[in-house]
Image (cartoon, rainbow, N blue to C red; front, side, top):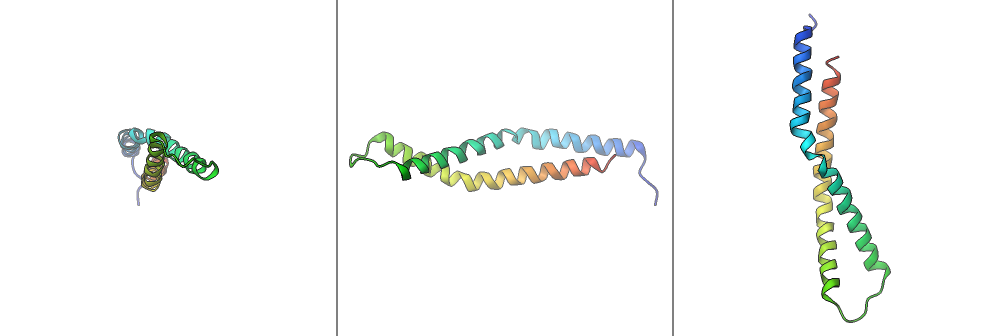
Length: 100
């Protein structure tokens, strides 16, 4: 079996790098959003577990409970999204590395 030509390898590598720039790079802020949501959820849930609250439940505490609950719902959703983007990025990098 013949090895692929140099121009075919260069074209394949350029296509893979372009695919990574067009598909993977726009999702890079997702990693920062995921880290922020995870930190907000952990800090919020620890706050509600460690500190006692008075009988009077204020609007601010109600909003905090809702936001922490929303962050708790978003963590598994964002985990799946971040894993898919990471695995796709690794796969494209591996395929681009084979072109050398």
